[in-house]
Image (tube, rainbow, N blue to C red; front, top):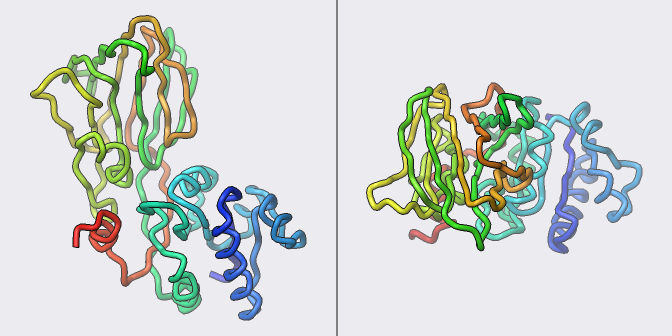
Length: 284
């Protein structure tokens, strides 16, 4: 992979410091690289500025410097492109951006020496219908979340799988997660951890259900979920990866399944999924 592109969280000072180290490495190695245009101007690298379309056309791989939120936001531009993404963590947990800043040079050297793996991560595809008309569709790498407003009553949620009613419950909402998203919001709501490098699945995790017997479910990505939500008339939101929020009104139906597109992620061979879980969650 000869040509890199840098995408940087503009709100994190440390991200610019890390980016400057990467730029110095590229120049010393006489490597071609691009920088997302807003960051390029702030780094005084105008000649290397590129919008997302140019990055998508020309880059062989992309380095995202920020936290998991930065990675999620940026990754949506490259779904299905097969351009692999490497996340450098200047955030908190960093399950997606699992290369720490002090490992930057090592990561660049390993990529330069073709010593890396590319993982294909499954995505979720969501379709929002109102009066039998599709009004929105979206992809999610982590999850699609249905949540109530803090001042509204509990939601009534009907969950169907393959057109069969599986559960009818009241609660604060519902998380539909991919294996990648199993270590995100779903984990906080009591969902299991799923190895996204080995398993393709869809995880269904209720949020504070008013039912002691209701537990998370893991189903095949080939199965199709249908969700109907009833509320007290106040706002209910559906949100894909925390970035695309849509209002859900009574009578709407949300369909979710495994997507026909994937996302490519660069992983270093000395870092397994369980190593990341152990380190990020301080298990040892």
